Image (cartoon, rainbow, N blue to C red; front, side, top):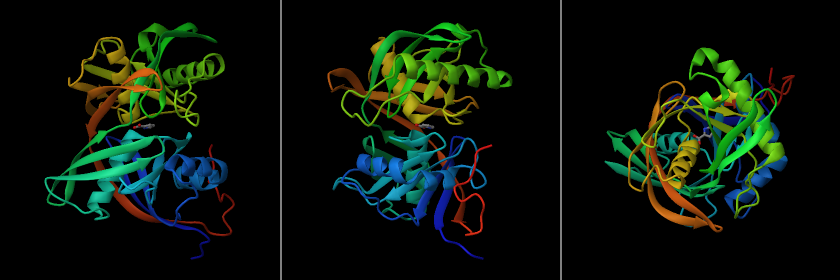
Length: 333
Ligand code: PYC
């Protein structure tokens, strides 16, 4: 067996969505902050990302996280998120996976019934409260980065769909929130190809006609996620089909998307603080969240979201690169 690269990982899934947590083989990246480390990864480590998430080691809906030493004294671990769409500023399901792996592998000091893990992410500090029983992580609640609605009742012209109305909100990534029945499609997995195609068209139109930009962090911008809301979704319980670049659906309810949805609902006066909100994924799994307080993000009114979900470890592995492998960075079909 020959290998010129060996990465150790603990694989997990969060409410159906995978997170490959890389625990060894990636050194501390250059950068004084985790945002700078993400920037370094974007510029220099795209091959490593593709090696981890694309075929044959991954698949078209794969995601993961590179564990790093933290860059700030108030954090236990740092995280750089990898996904088929690129290096994300923040990933909610991924962070639930990371917290579960850190607890269940003993990579943090574990206390029962609750272990707190503070994570240094490119989008800011995220605190995970892990409910632990007999050494097992039963539930993770994340206090996420500040979320906000950037624009309500925006619209773009989408080829084949006409004028599409949407709200743009941020919860660690930007989300265009679109009511699914407005584009004439049912919330039905049998129609997933049409829903995905519509999502990619809306994404393209938003990025061409009205690209979102973070009011404080210039490294965060653009729209890679369209959150289609099922008919009957309310300020207490929503169902979504989350279309993500370059062409897949989140299997989990999407943590940063849940945060963005709660910020949008709050901005519309439909979700008060400290009120339970359930977000359901395309496969029927759930995150339960609430808004803790109001904040301001570079002059934009925002909120502090938290949400809870569960993750399960699915395997451990060493991912190798044979020097003769014709696909050293994997491939996409
Ligand atoms: O859970 O935040 C999330 C997420 C982002 C992309 C896929 N999942």
